[in-house]
Length: 371
Length: 127
Image 1 (spheres, each protein chain N blue to C red):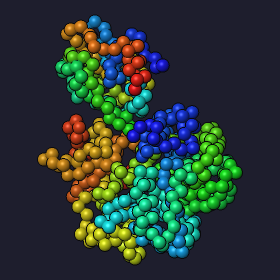
Image 2 (image 1 turned 120 degrees about the horizontal axis):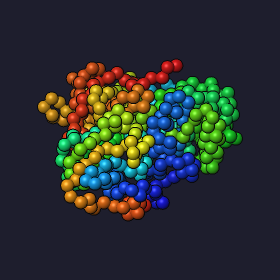
Image 3 (image 1 turned 90 degrees about the vertical axis):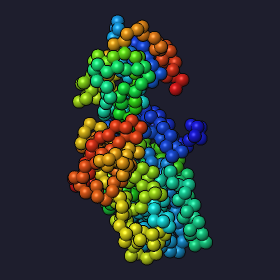
């Protein structure tokens, strides 16, 4: 894809002015880093970070029983949500493998907002539209909705400094509220992808989004708040073992082996993929996504092979990186169930260079914030 | 316009070479460092005394995001390896042309085939 076809968010000029290194990502021109991945990572853990995640897909499902219709297409029990509540879920196909991971927001019984991955928008919006044809109105709002994530221990005080009203301070984890920020009407959700407290701000795809972004940046400067690129977004989510679609989960993986069985509510009634998932659950999985720590000086990357004592490939590394918080090299891999227990030794091979390095299965999440 | 030290020679793979008689000190350029970001690991596949062939991979440098091969700018024998990089790979970020050096190669013949700063600068500008 040539650069001219890449799409830009309302914050594009700010990313450039901030020294962000812009790279192609899922059809978008997005900052991978500004001051540096490690520096940005620590800023989020110690203070707060601002993320432009406007590339994410957003669509609204409207119908008389919208939440139940969405429930037909996702594994989690979104039917139990109350107005203003959100839930993480996966969305499976008939084979029980993962089309995308989503957050479902119940605005009210008749109106549900769904956020999907940027890379899956062109698949998921038609999937919902097709499946709910004649029963619900599905409207893609991605081009009208900018999304700014504020994450870190200072996130809520930063929002207060920016004049966010009391509703925002009181909104519990995985709930959301309408609000006004910098005179801009927006929706603020207590969600994130970093393992820290924080919010995601849905705002209009205009200069108003840029104004919110700029205001938060300016107010945060003295508190160590920084803009954060995709690079640190990845290391932050990895430390918390949050799945990255396209790396850890995709249409070849099912939620049980991916450690997302907790999002599958087989008892909630019928939904897309339920029969297959029931069969998988009954039969048991053959492999599991585990967290590992390197036990020698090496970093295993996405695509590295898990090999047995006879050098046969028995699994694959899906994510791997240095962990800035833990000062260790960590990662996620699909391994045979027999090698999935904490303490199991793993041998990981770089397929391009043939180098083999040792790792050990560890408890996840790698990092959990102290509350 | 990027600015690269005038007393060094360069490769298209963004390595620099400081020629001192038949000894050539090698590292990676500021441009390479900027592209990589935080460097977290350096691995040399070869030891002091190993023979290098021009263009062959002799190790890797890894940042948070990615792993990149190091290619020998010249043929010769490795006579020194910067072991300080084992514990402190960030020396490459902080001081790419000095403390972040990687290996010293002893060459048998004349040094040729490397770019001067102007040619390297043009190479970088051309992307």
